Length: 177
Image (tube, rainbow, N blue to C red; front, side):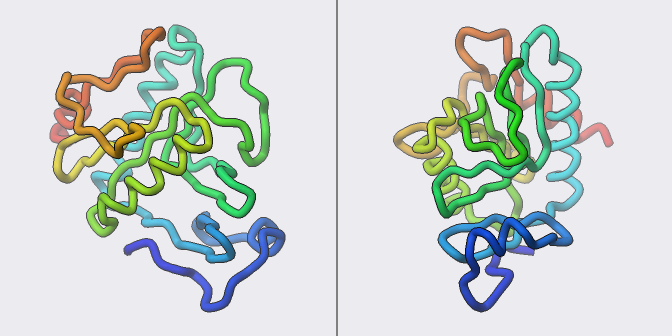
């Protein structure tokens, strides 16, 4: 299912925040957008990544949150597939401070350009690291000020930390099941 407006008419931030949705939605300037729920590849890659961050939580000094709301602007609430916080980060019901990293797992029904727009919004908010993993095309991207940059180095890494993810190993794990 592609991301689409969930309601015909604009709603207020207050209405968005006080409504319970079957699956969490994003909110952009009065429009509630359903999120792609993902298929097997999407869900499994998301699970593998959460597992890697949890397994290395102490060594990497981070903790991952699946589908955590992040308020990137006054009227923008995004729900990245994975949000990674540094140990000791402020604990908020909805994040209003930039996390260390957000990861979007690309879905086949969402144009990469739309994901690139979200990545630019994350960076403008102050999130230092934005990764996009596409389990269908078996590629990964880094969000940069120039757009999404294809990862050619063989790994996604956060400089100054031991955090390293090798996309090919991630995709090999996906192919094992």
